Image (cartoon, rainbow, N blue to C red; front, side, top):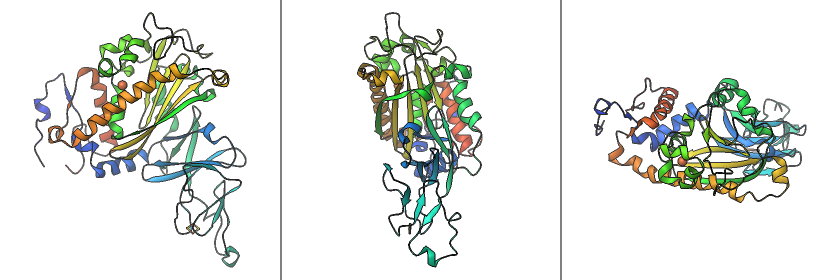
Length: 388
Ligand code: FES
Ligand code: FE
């Protein structure tokens, strides 16, 4: 093992060590994260309304597995491993689509209904020993919350209430505070997909701190002057970050947005809340809309982020101009993802072999690192990963 440029004992008490560089570059580390994090926890896969019609489907990569989510004939969402039970071909090759009644494998035409049961196969009548249920698609656990379908590949999924709902509500102080936004009733105003050439943890860490806000987010700091102090949005637990005095709405130029959502309380008005639901979801709440980021970690150095801007259905239905509203966080996203992409190549520099440091305003990122290490079975917190 190469000696890092400093040991933890040499770090001044006001700073704490980050993960070492290879945590962000080593395919073996990413594979452990796929197995022990992404495939073990609830993963926010698709917006339920994207699959409005029976027969509509979406395929998503969850850890090392490709998962197929369909809307059944009776209107429920179902999730399956996207693997034909015959000889293992990928069943649905497209990312999205709609079938009339059945899903047919493009290899030998085994055919499944939208509930995953094997319903037909060429020459199946000559193979009476093939059990159509036993050879149905392999089911994946699915829950719906906030208007999204969350899937879990674990044989025994962790408590959804604790690890998803509880984790989100914890940032707001109480459950009602989140319910006020009625996220599951909102309509999609805009979706932008970002293909980010950076490790997913750099994106989480960036989202968790605001030490960078004054440097790279001029528009956001204009709207939320408190962020100039460098405190993370997540430090404003329970009370959110307040809009600047002359700011009229959460828009790129501080101009008027839309009427506040009907149940947003007076305390929540003119405030911004940010929530991380580990491992891959960020939620931003402002009085007139909700922004949901879903990350899809595809490789140690590549993460696709789907960002949804959600508004009251009447706002979207009226054809209102959303551009100033969307532009604020789109710019923030671009600024953040460019920062992450600037950081990614340096993770393999010898300068970062032993990692970097967290200043006090970022110390809560250390808790995220401890959580990652614990999930990876790396023992007590420290910048050492298995195998080092
Ligand atoms: Fe799917 Fe043969 S692999 S039908
Ligand atoms: Fe940022």
